[in-house]
Image 1 (cartoon, rainbow, N blue to C red):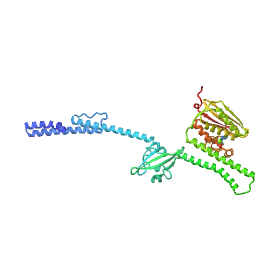
Image 2 (image 1 turned 135 degrees about the horizontal axis):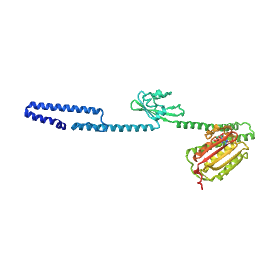
Image 3 (image 1 turned 180 degrees about the horizontal axis):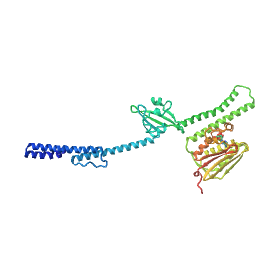
Image 4 (image 1 turned 60 degrees about the vertical axis):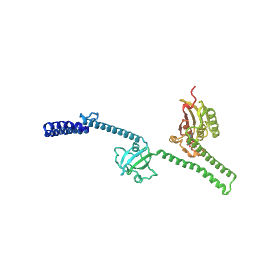
Length: 429
Ligand SMILES: Nc1ncnc2c1ncn2[C@@H]1O[C@H](COP(=O)(O)OP(=O)(O)O)[C@@H](O)[C@H]1O
Ligand SMILES: [Mg+2]
């Protein structure tokens, strides 16, 4: 209506006037001329519009056109600006979504119907060695060439994931699942399960070790019991001898079970149940008397206590220190020297046990605190060892934020040192 009034009225009015004055022909001629002018003007503006639409001025200025055309330009420009802002917002959202997906620790890969990679996140790059944009559109089976993988993708089992073991230096284990995405696509999800696999391997080794450790004494005991029950003639000395061996083996099983229980209790909690100021003089005196009874006079044993009280769990500390002392005695031949010491060094509390025993070859040192790890199996068994002592020591020290340091020379002896942090000692006066 507005266009009609503003565009057509200026032509109709003069045409009518001229028509009335000079006759109808003049009127029509004026009208035709006016309409021609309008068409020319509109065409020109349309050309300007077309040119402007090809390259709209982002700064916001619209072509100079008055009236209705001016309004059309302004509205178009406003809409273009609005759209441009939306596009920027969507791009920013997409970018932050991509960043979020890259921060996810699990690998994610989108595959199309023909298993071509459409998208993947950073973790997938690490797990499956996918590198975008290089591998964009690549067929996943050609990148992950592992026996069974293509079969799994063709028929992904809802229950069991595909287990992938990387051949890289840090050999890792990944569990890969394929889930349907929409009608034809698939989403691959890869999870790093290295730690879980390690724990599972450790668990089964542990069970095998425990069974093995229990089996030997049980075999001995049951063999002797057969002797007793099959009615053969046996002297009183023989009977006593067998009974003594069976008793030794039973004790061995008992100490193994005791150590296992201690370990499992220690592993179940992070921190000691209770802590107190442990006076070290009486503790060292107790360790000395235990050491003397184990040594039966075969070693020279010395104690030195020149440190303050230690904050910790008395029972646990006694167990850890006692283990170190009993090792020193068991792995030191008769006539050797053992020195048990508590003191401070560089503000740390240091408990150490030094012996002049058999020593430990350097290659064994890093593994000594592993459960059931022994340098000399025979010697450990003969002296009633379970192979769990140092594992218990390590756990107790960890719970006290202490470090275990071992120095040893084959044939010369060993020093086991537990270093406690300064805050476990009373503040300096
Ligand atoms: N003071 C030591 N001197 C020499 N070897 C030691 C000493 N302490 C520990 N070991 C070695 O470390 C191994 C593990 O010690 P531990 O865990 O206490 O088990 P075990 O019950 O055999 O003593 C021992 O079997 C022994 O080979
Ligand atoms: Mg031991």
